[in-house]
Image (cartoon, rainbow, N blue to C red; front, side, top):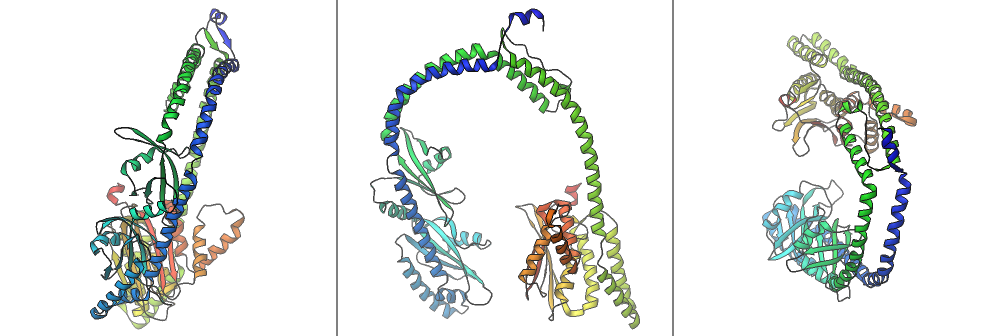
Length: 610
């Protein structure tokens, strides 16, 4: 930049330029605002003094009470003794007699609320009874809901007996002091048109509102489709909703409520078109004045701040070049050529920015070198920990197997010794050699070898059942994660049980979430609830996680797991090291019933991995 250019250019501080602009803008807008503030305030007071808030809240309260009433009706039917007997009946004669009784019960329940169109009982074994609808009306709902756990919820919408209905659902379980058994589903079909007509009339006002009722997935249950589509544009803060029709444009004041009983959303909309003309007139005057003022401001800004805008644009483009990864920009200096009226702060920013680029380039090299060293150290530590965990072997298993081999040798059982030692050698060779990742099929070959040894030891104390879904055996998993859990199930579950037990091993793919679930279930002694809680707490303390002041508690939890065998903690730690904290073990157990352990791994085959 030459000396002559510096002499002819006028540099003003940015603060002074902003002060001039704001003073001018304040003087111009003050007159406009004072002129229209009286009319605007009066109109706003008239608009919001209407009774939308008390009316809409009363309507929402009536709707909430209605769905609470439906819930009480569902409970009274689902746990009625005659309904229970009907669903548990297995003889045709009694079933028909029970059908007549349950029909009387459903008729009586329907009289409790005039909005009820149909009540249906859909048994898990094919029993069905309803007032008006057929089983076809509820078949899709039953198939979807039977696979989920819930207490009372919305199933969806359906046309039943020529009426658009909102279908509510509740599961039915058997009564008694023993284990509750799932019997089926109860469906309650509500005439939503009748429901909201009743709720609106009970508010005691003359309003004719528009009502939009959405389910938990924001799908329309009741209301006009065009209003429902326009809800996307609703301004929650101002409560305004505009619907563009063919003939005119209608503006609504909207209130939103949540119906917590079924987690639905209720919108109450009141037409504001009667005040629209007044609002248009007021804002027309305001817009004319503001438009004229805006033109003047823009002219002023164009002349005064064009250098600023141009400078910021150049700076923005240069920064985007840096963010795109072009490291050559660090070597280039950032320059700005301002016009006749320049800004002194821009020159200072340019100098400071160039100095920052130089320092940043140096710092980037330093940080990159540091992170590279840290990554190499962390990766080596992780691989070392995984190798250590995988190499752990339960000494009790080895001791018991060698003792059994000694006993076989004393009895002269040569063939059995060959089979057991061969299986034992395959297990040890598999655990220390080969790739870290194997297919589930390869892992199960070793599990079967291990179970053959245990069957030689325990005889008919337990049976083994396999249940592997299609394509599950080709999934890649970390080596030696199934065998330790199978060992744990036998040693701490089946071996301690005084009765013959069963061991179930299976796997299935969840395509929706993209993982493979592997489960090991035994019908052994199980564990009490407090011990299960301790076990889950211990597994929640993940490897490598800082324990802080709870280090002693974590050590106690490790001792709990060590007492139960190294398998569970070993596998859990390795799963976290391989896949992260979302893939910890899932454990369920009930004392005297058994224990179920589930492993989840991302579904990948060897072909996909390559």
